[in-house]
Length: 292
Image (tube, rainbow, N blue to C red; front, top):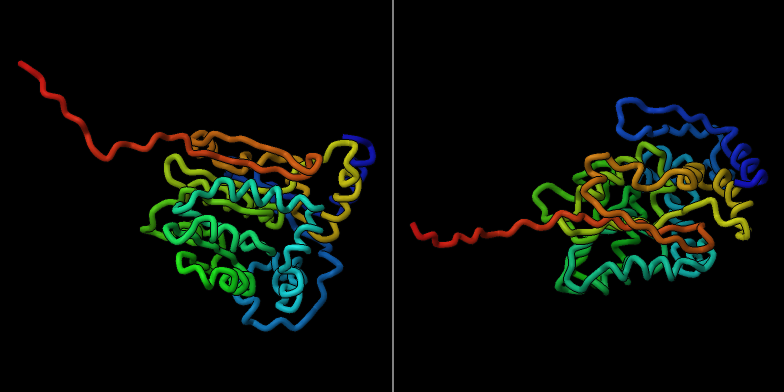
């Protein structure tokens, strides 16, 4: 890592207190943000939009994901393209390529833009598609996007609770994916979400994460200014630069999956795929006649 990048890391982490959690297979770090985004202002957002929403969302991301007026403006594919430096389409294609017509899939966390309706169309009426989000206005927007697709369900719930991803009694998913979600949550929540997603897929199923990655290659200008952007707007995102996604998985659970990673945008983004390599057990037993 270059001296300039190290300096950026130090400046961005200067006001962040990290304390390790104990009794966890992965050393999760709880992040206490001293200063939140300057775009967060005390504004009157009714309880309808903040009820049961985690405090980190209302403290840091109200301007982007909770305030209904701003959400209407930002839930636009052109905004998503710009924010992701025009890598959004190729990253979305990576997700869509893992979805088969007729499959059962879930998107963990609603995303602005066209990914939700494109995924619903790809899965089609013979499949089963769910979206879960912890913020009411995000669930509302997801519902609007799939209202013409009766095979789609939208749930309001925290992905840190396993039953909100895979309700009790439901058949596991073929594919579970999250698009640019992990970097927005504190480290202890990253751990919970990753493990809940891994446990939600069937034997032979896949879990896909599209996320920030880094540091970007030396020739990529984002290497030098993104740490400041993260500190300003995304205080939990720098963890994605020094921790592999699989590090958030329980050791025993991690071993059940084959992990792969592809990077995009000059190493600024990653697509991680975990495939449950367990071979499905046969539903019947063949008994051969034996002569005595």
